[in-house]
Image 1 (cartoon, rainbow, N blue to C red):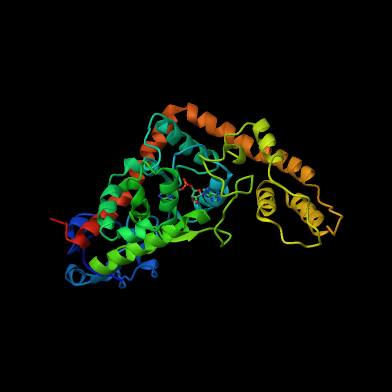
Image 2 (image 1 turned 45 degrees about the vertical axis):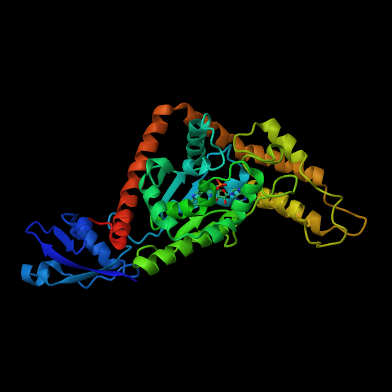
Length: 413
Ligand code: TYM
């Protein structure tokens, strides 16, 4: 771990200045005594030698060396790990996004120091036409809030409002090699889908994603299963950077409260639910009631299990997963029991009934989100205020990291 040495001085007003070799980082930054207390308390992130300002005279203080780890988040709430995640504004948000990612965001906002953003630069790699982009960005912000994110508790921002990300992306590009980028699963998939637009942004998509995460020195990244490889790549770039320039970037890990990362299947059981493909097989947070009913009633099922306690096929497991999300525990248990009590030629579970119940419970779940998101989207002044506030919070954190990065690289002229 890279450790900086700091000298501490004390003024009459009991305000401390921290000075360091990295004067461009800290010079003149006022650190209140209360914050110093917190610095001392957060011992696992930070080693600070015991300071007792009341007993120290100026000479002694001048010699008193504070040892702070590089990732010290001075201006952030202490003792809270940093969390970051993002969503591309490439279409309507769906249950996969909610269940794989947003559900965790909402829970994490009370426990961690959270940054959530709309990945509009990433969307250009596959959606170069920007006519609908502004609307989509606003909708993603509105839907995040409608799902329970509180913009006062978290930084909710738009990627392109934080230019520091682009600079970190540039440094990290030097840590990324063409061969491994070409082997990335998402890259190969996109090459298949858009052979006429295999742009460099697409190739370096995981590098930009790493910059999104590392710019806040985030360690927990709530995402669905499809992002696992991108997280592994982000760790690789951080490790390579640290190895080459010094220990500045903590390693980020994918996170889900349940432990295992989630993958919600499309309702036809083929592939994952996604924003822009398979619209009839995707449940969107903006779907009308009738559309929800229609889609769920058409979801793939089969003739039922042939023996008690059979293993559920993926597409049936998926219906149960959705049911666990929106129905009561008793309802889920009833259908679990029906499934498990099946025996050869005697299928107890009626998928038609299960889907009817799921549709009604899903409508009850989606309806208030849809209504709230629509309200927020109408209120352009509110949206603007939230976006500005989010950008300010995100830039404050991003510029601290970038200063550390530039210093480490030797770009601190
Ligand atoms: P995106 O926009 O495709 O999806 C947003 C989030 O939703 C999750 N997700 C799913 N989870 C379970 N089942 C599904 N069917 C499903 N579909 C989507 C995704 O895993 C994701 O968590 N590359 C990212 C955006 C991004 C990002 C980042 C994420 C850019 N920079 C930094 C985290 C950190 C993406 O395309 O997500």
